[in-house]
Image (cartoon, rainbow, N blue to C red; front, side):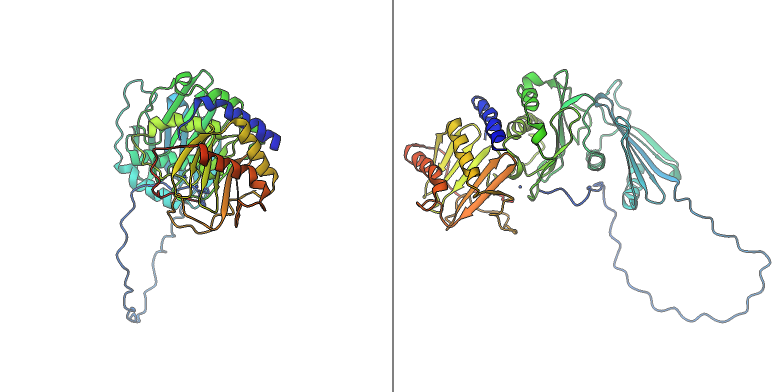
Length: 447
């Protein structure tokens, strides 16, 4: 595994000349329901007084028998809905019956799934769809989001261009959570980031012919695809060189406010689930992920809120906080950022060979482990970038994820595994150049 790490890191660092500029959530317990307008809450219920006793009487014999109750056909369809975007081959159907059984079908892939006890979703659709206005899409608009629905009991139906942003996001999220993300047929690399506290869901798909599709879940009409050679020139190369045979299916860390992400790194490859990439991604996926993140940034720029900086940056390979409050962060492009004991920042550079030698020695020491064990189970929403502590802590992005470890002190002669790390930190403190970055404390999230 270490040799795989060496090779992956070498590929990763080979792209340092194209430096990428410089926060952690487990999957939800279940798929998120449609976010439709909620019905008003009922007023407080007050039990009625006990009923008075009924008077006694003798009933006359009935001349005709009472009619028997008509049995309810729970299998009868109550709602049918079809959601399509022809340009990207999206064609998904929802059918729900009176008994609350719901079937979802992806007409493009042929996948179908059944869910029981979905009465809440059925009720929301029955309340929302009758008030929905659907206009005809512009002539020939195959990038327009189109919706068709049928409510047999209400004898209502509709078809046309879906332009309601709440319903757009709700339907996309509901179907993606149950059927998985939609990538157009022929997708070589696909990536979807779900809805979060910071942005609506958004998707990217690289096609075999070099077209790059990018869209938001709230888009009423998709933008035309761009030329990937211009928009994301290294994407195809990085995807082709990702070590797909050694990747896990899940890289998940529980961080408040972050999205669940889905990555298809090769055609028809298993979907890799990611959350809180800062604290979960391995070094082998970092170059590809950074390229995807950079390619999606323009389409969410106007609809997203800025995320607070992470305690372990997404671009970082190593972060060392020493007991004396000095700190060293090494980024994947070789940039080293140092804070001295007075929180004065400095910058320097580290060579690829230095990074490989240093990180391999730390992994071989056996002092680091996966699992973020140095973080408390319950963490306050904010912490400071530098807080003097009585311990030394290391975070290292390795081949299987983020490793960490904590010690009373890692700077003395009794800690030989960290001698090279301390020597590098001290050297950069002595030779690094002060930066223009303010050393004031900044709120940062931790896992």
